[in-house]
Image 1 (cartoon, rainbow, N blue to C red):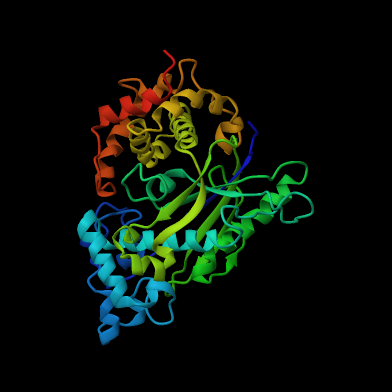
Image 2 (cartoon, rainbow, N blue to C red):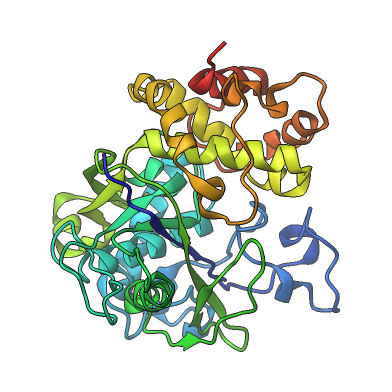
Length: 398
């Protein structure tokens, strides 16, 4: 087994605008806005599931709505399905009715998958090239792998929840020139992801413990641009944890064969992905680390990881994860690339984490956040206690 020590994480945050919603409707449950214009503080569905737009994309064809009111990139001058508002709206409604999700979630998922499609076309099939260490030259053997919670939904079909993050592992970036190579790879990956949106790169933001060395890609939305964030950290990965998978958007699940052929961004394209076993080790480590460090706000924000782990424990991939997580955890320096001091895996396995200890503050905070998943999950959401047992079973050496 060889070690592939570099990863890249890209997170897409997009604001979709409709009519100005009332603060009572759109901002329920959100922090009180700091200005008298609460609609400017409503980031659709990324912080609240209570928003719903009042217009249809097909209204554009009849002059019923101005282009500035549409989600970014839909309508006049757009490419792909987004360039056909009536067809877009029809498929959107089909997905919405079948899944029971609000429209903004499905629209955003379309843009996430569109970015993935253009990313997949940036290099040779199944091998998205990134900069190597040797003077910034492109290496044919370098690959970029799709991973994380979104891959569990769109590539593996294990989970049934909305996911707004695009996680990647970029490999073959090691050696003395790795630091420079990381910067170049970070920029290149961000450009590939931004291709369908045609955006420009902004300077690096100031580094902190959670966003070390990331790139911003501007997304112009009226007078308040949002951005796409690309990040690279160092992680461990064995070369037998890769598999080529077909990626499909939520809308793509309800598209006709003709639509899939005409609009390839809907899905059906392939990406190299990490197997769920790797994701298990990563997510168990992330939850355990936050519980041990007392980072309860961050723990609650990752409550989705508990659901993901429970679904993997119910899947055919559970036994492989139980067999290999101990080895992955041992070979993942710096707690899966986050830097700083490593938080050791408990002797009993992650099942021995304080997170799974009844009555612990960490478990209480996670239980408090767990009901919020109901707004994001369209499949079975196991009770909190059952989800804990399933997640712990993935690494219990007792």
